[in-house]
Amino acid sequence: MAEVVLFHHVQGLTSGVVAFADELRAAGHTVHTPDLFEGRTFDSLEEGTAYVRQVGFGEVGARGVRAAAELPREVVHVGFSLGVVPAQELAQTRDGARGALLMHACIPVSEFGAAWPAGVPVQVHAMEHDPFFAEDAEAARALVAESSDAELFLYPGDRHLFADSSLPSYDPDAAELMTRRAVEFLGALDGDGRNPR
Image (cartoon, rainbow, N blue to C red; front, top):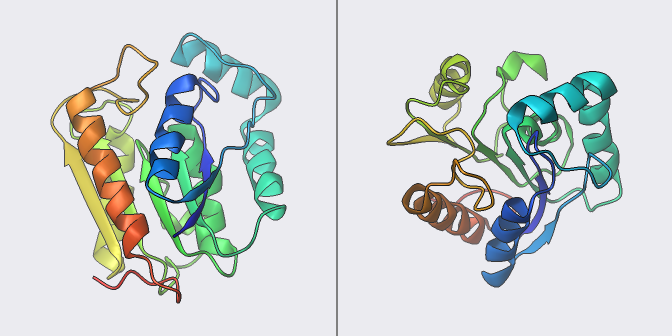
């Protein structure tokens, strides 16, 4: 089974993010959930964003990279929204990455390199009318177009953090489908780090 590092979103390491990690654990995977906010959680996107601005977006991303440095190189990098930044950076730049799951966000590949690395499968999951994902949709479609190992899954609706069961934006049907696809993705990874589909 896969070893996973899961980076939380801008509201912090909420109980909903931990619950998602626990679902992956229940499927047999080892999941690490570094807390990039040092124990802080926030009641709204606005409060979390204000904290990130105070600390610095670069520092939050650097915390994620430092957290991953303590883990084996052969991990799957998973991020929820803000957590996509360190997850995608590590998937693109750290040798040994087995794959990536990008939830609710996608950064242009050019931010971290010339191209998505060959042999590193990736899935992007978002709601089709999420206003926060609107600016990321182009990057996600470009990633899928340029990589043979990339998939984009769009769910009906307009909620941003729909997979966090502790938030009002939670959508149980979309979250269940996304979780099922994530578990299948992780289960399909073989010893070479390639998705054998």
